[in-house]
Image 1: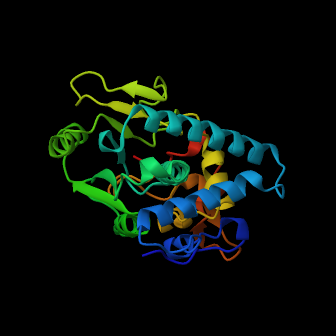
Image 2: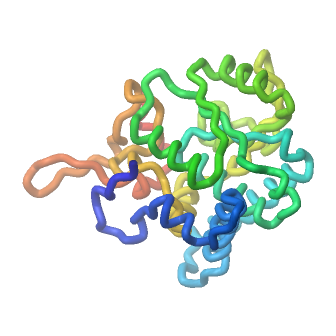
Length: 273
């Protein structure tokens, strides 16, 4: 369940609920089409707005356009039955999901062949309840067919692909600053002894500041943990609020600023062991 933000110092960072997001589109008999329309409206409003003419917003718009181009390339190469998404409820996956939905809205014939977006969620040994509640909300709001698999990554992917052997490509929310992301390209086949499929990384070159400018600027829902000082979410045993957001109040008590207020990529994973 989404909690209220711990601070309302900046209305720019006030998250919208998944329910409010879904109201951006008229309800039809196709929930996925409704979600795609809502995503397209959110993205279009951000791209067309001239209220914020800052260099940061210009970069965000450029990244959105490039990512949507890459996603259009993906659906041109792979029919619906061959493409899935790795979704863990984190901020990066949320950006990727919204952009993919927006692209689907632009391709109604392709969209009509999908009932729900196939996804895999590889669970950690000790997941955050808040994160998994958000994943459940996303499954309903965005019409996601999510398989929850509690295995190490390689085995989880093997299990998932065994259950849906038609999958040839997977959308992944990896960014270049993530572990193992430095040498990836937007379309990167898996290597080594990993299950063979095409990794599609549409937000590979997004910066942390761009991620947050998109989510907050387009009023996209995100997991409540980010409003409690978390900036990179793993499991409850290896993740804590980011010390770079530690703030001491006048009376000496300690709290954390909200995750969207950290824009430095080099400090993003300081809360991870």
